[in-house]
View 1 (cartoon, rainbow, N blue to C red):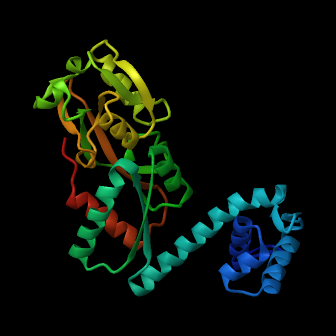
View 2: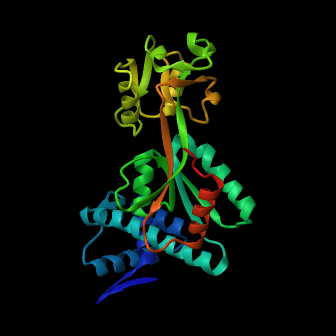
View 3: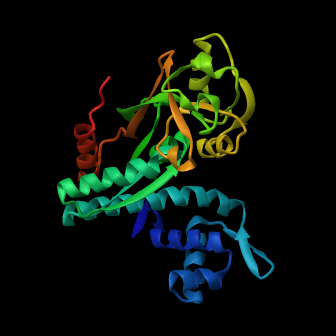
Length: 303
């Protein structure tokens, strides 16, 4: 498969070879992984360098490593191959009723939400397509959707701009996570003020949830006694289970796995909307369209 513009032609297969070689940094290892001969790989890389007019690698002992031109190509090549694969999957889906869908979700919910959602979809529609799952935080998911690496993402509200279509999928309510032996553990509901006497583990400024958490405490014009700041909720849960403090955070599906107690916070009111997102573009594969519409109908958001 080639990309042709004027007198310039690029072999996409050579780009795949280039990416494997850039990762393994050894012709023999790359040729073995690609199931081609080492001379064949060397010829393909030479052809790619001739097409571009620059060398892409430099020797590093018995291995090789990317030079400045190779590093520049690497990022673009990953995007190009990803788009080519998506295009191939789309046509496969159209012609054979198969194809693949790449779904991404924030870590705290993806392990529970995405497999169950896909299972429901396959059961209800007799779909035989392939689904690929990815996880990350909200900025990771959003950027992956923007780059075309993911077809559909599930994440919290962010800066959509005009290139993202977002549908409110579900909502989370606030809770305080405590050790079973903590004084608050016997309560069925608490106010945010009730949490203030105790040391707290909060989300760090690297977390997409931090602004929402700050706004939540601003409603009562008070701020917690911060013991630790942590980016990931899984680590927060582990620290709560070890007795380092309590944590005010949206309840996530795996709280019980850590042996913790999640107590609803009823005052002040707070909820976090969980969105389903995709790129605004002219073409979406039939599989993507069907899955998107299924999610909207199967799990309609209610205020």
